[in-house]
Amino acid sequence: MKLTRLAILSVLVAGLLLLGLVTIVSAAAPSVTITGYAYTGPPLVTADAATSVMPSLATLNGEIIYRGSSNVTCRGFEWGYATANYTASWNETGALEEGVFSHDISGLTGNVNIYWRAFAINGQGQGNSTELSFLTTALPEAPTNFVVTGVGDTMVGISYTMGARADTIVIRGSSDGYPASVTDGYLVYSGNETALTIDSLNLQTSTYYYRAWSYNDYGYSTSYVQDYVGNPLGIPQTTMFIVGLFISFGMVGFAFWKKGWLRIILSICIIIWGVFYMSYDIKIAAPLIAVGAVLFIQAILKQIQYAREQAE
Image 1 (spheres, rainbow, N blue to C red):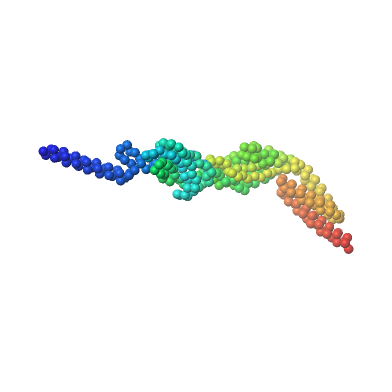
Image 2: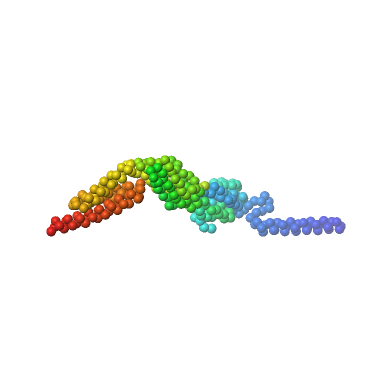
């Protein structure tokens, strides 16, 4: 009899313990039942870290852990530039099962935080993952203070300041105009020095055009800097200088005794000649422009004086 009572008491205690366990499980996860773990609420969704993050691109990754008591009909992602403020989304529809899913997003802004979450929808509603975030990478900024200077007749010096977030500067050159892209023309330099010299050129009769981009692991800068050096007219420097001297001396004499509009036209020619020469040597071009400007003003004044004399 004692054994029987003990057995009955043990069964009652075990039953109470089992009832308490079921109550605890039900309270912790009210949408899950013990039998088969059938889920009766919205889908359970998780999000994994974004991958392939670039300045404007990224891959979002999610997973439907439990679909619930009805089929998942839609799954996707939501994202934006502030926490819990999703301004863009993507989704796909159909009879969707449990498992992982991913999507590539584009059009992002570089060097900013992106906040996002995964979601899935069934007949009971929408289930969301916790919010995750990532920082987009950034393209480098273009170099600054890019200056190309002629040194004698065969050498140029190039100096510049590296752009922000740049690992490398890439300089392309051409004799037919500025290179159109990072593959056009010929490679002059690729590295992280801030000054260099280029030799074996012919600045007497040729012009060299240089364009530079910044580069890092994520690509090239979207803008560039450029400068050129040489003789865009193709006339040898010595020839230009001699002709310029004859014109200058002739104009000085002409300006003092000749009246007429031709004097004004010739002074303008000297100014234009100096402007063209500036591409080769500013030390020669500047005086030419100054002389031309002085002669132009003098010619205008003489023409005004001549007109007054004629009127009298």
